[in-house]
Length: 85
Image 1 (cartoon, rainbow, N blue to C red):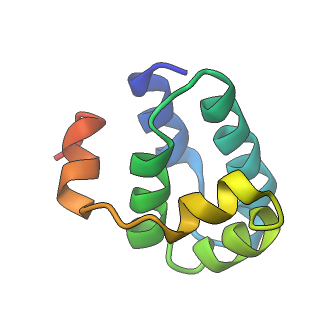
Image 2 (cartoon, rainbow, N blue to C red):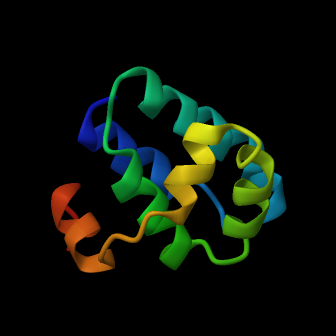
């Protein structure tokens, strides 16, 4: 998934439980395309604080995603990597 599409998707995802399925789909699409998962999860953690715990709970049964949610990445660096300011 290309970075500009990821940014577009991030903008469309609300910070609420109703956006969970859309967010999960985006995460799986990024994973399939070997995209910047750590950066996206970091941005979600800071910009979607209401949605993030639901996302984490939904995906952490998968060992890859569980590790992903435990990784720490600097927020500003994640934004810069995706071309955000």
